[in-house]
Image 1 (tube, rainbow, N blue to C red):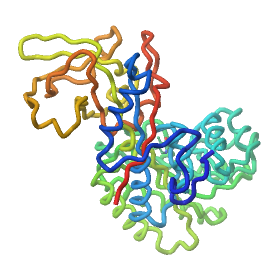
Image 2 (tube, protein in one colour):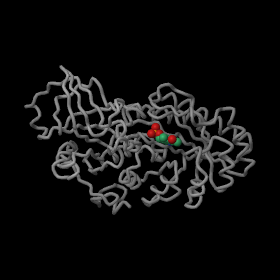
Image 3 (spheres, rainbow, N blue to C red):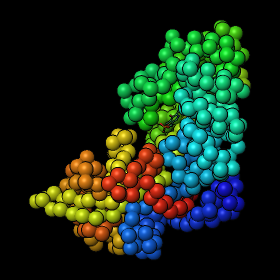
Image 4 (cartoon, rainbow, N blue to C red):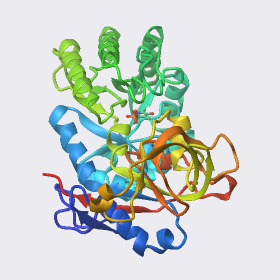
Length: 415
Ligand SMILES: *Cc1c(COP(=O)(O)O)cnc(C)c1O
């Protein structure tokens, strides 16, 4: 539960999900990390890696979403980062949720979120999970095959369906999803007929332009395709469609404004005649990427001429799996254990460096040819903006802790 929080998130409360939140100034995160390293036994003695989650950044992102897309309700895609405090805090800010499994639904409900605020946005679900959704009152799901219609009819006939269509492929997305999900244009009509025959309601359309989309044109053509589905449904005499789900793919950087403009423009162009249209989205990366910072410890070192090689205690089998799985390009910086103010006095000489993860697999390489100032064994390395598809997909390969790394909560002040 989210303690005493209100619309403003933290105003009346010092904790989220039962966890203490430290208020810090806007640039205070390095000071906070130093205080953790000096005081937390896991960091101080065991030198275990840890995350810092800045709720001030989450709040800013929610404001940014509302400012740019005021008519589109965000359903946060839990798979991107299911950290309980993060999910609880988003719930306190009024977010809804995209869950893909029974466990994700259970988690979100445990934060006091109502089942109406959840979309079961996995087009292909195990029957036991569908029955669970029926039991707890989650009444909206996506589909893209006739077999899913049959399962829904059997296990959850009251459920409202949203047809997932394949967004036209754009090379630029970091992780395209079209190869796995989404009905092709010629499959739409048979699918709508199948639902009609089964007596299951289809209330809308969804798509996903690919995770980490960088080309706003993807939204334009996907929305054009969605408008065609609305027309097909009307032609078949289905009840009027009323939900438009623009999926995920948003990034939090400067491209967000462009994507938001493109989405609004295309909705205006293709859906201007729709009244009472409910527009939702399923952003994952947009909310999860920026607020999390990872701090890992240097556990080994080698020098070969100019080259510096470091071994750290998190890697591609842990939180940094996003380098492989999500094609992430990480940004890192040594944490100065002195105060930042003394930094100018220090040498800023950098070396081409390789950073390895801790496991005995050569694939476990975090970065090559990365310019870093010289570090020693026992120093700490900071990875910023590391919340998307990172801790969510780690393993404990080789006995190194890649899951369940502790997360400390801060709330930075922003003006
Ligand atoms: C993964 C996923 C998302 C989130 O995608 P992002 O690119 O992280 O925004 C949204 N919807 C569905 C159905 C997904 O599978």
